Image 1 (cartoon, rainbow, N blue to C red):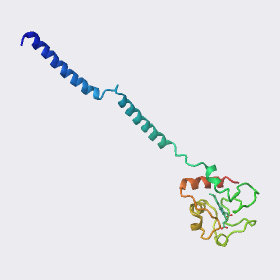
Image 2: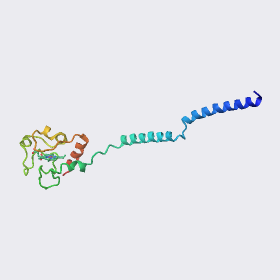
Image 3: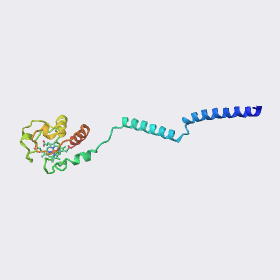
Image 4: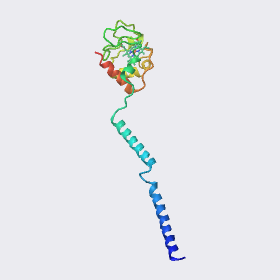
Length: 157
Ligand code: HEC
């Protein structure tokens, strides 16, 4: 092996070592497009977590929730009863007070006031709270949806 061959051998060895280490660095290279995509994903996930922590989930609008009641109820003052009684100013009224409506026996015998708690239990499962009620409505499972409807009823005055 002459001097020149030895020199070029050494050079190529250095080159190989250099390339291997360069390759290893490239594995975490910030120019890697996939890495950039991953970083964006992580950022978006963080941003979503941050917003959902500060802004409450919207859910169904009160209009949509109350729409299902409107099949049987009117809400404005002096409007006619439908299958169910008019519900204007129902909040804090005694149950079955509307003498233009023919309530069920169980409604007439119940002695309650439509406060938050009773409205909540009633709207959750009408025929469980007032057994044999004429109100043929399954109820609303979600507490936040019931709360929206109760707030709506409170404002009818
Ligand atoms: C399928 C028809 C129907 C639907 C839908 C319905 N109701 Fe009723 N509701 C009735 C009837 C009938 C009564 C009277 C019950 C009785 O006499 O047993 C009643 C009674 C009530 C009362 C008590 C009224 C009073 O004078 O004491 C409230 C409050 C009420 N409903 C709220 C609602 C709300 C809020 C919704 C919508 C989430 C709703 N109802 C959906 C038929 C319905």
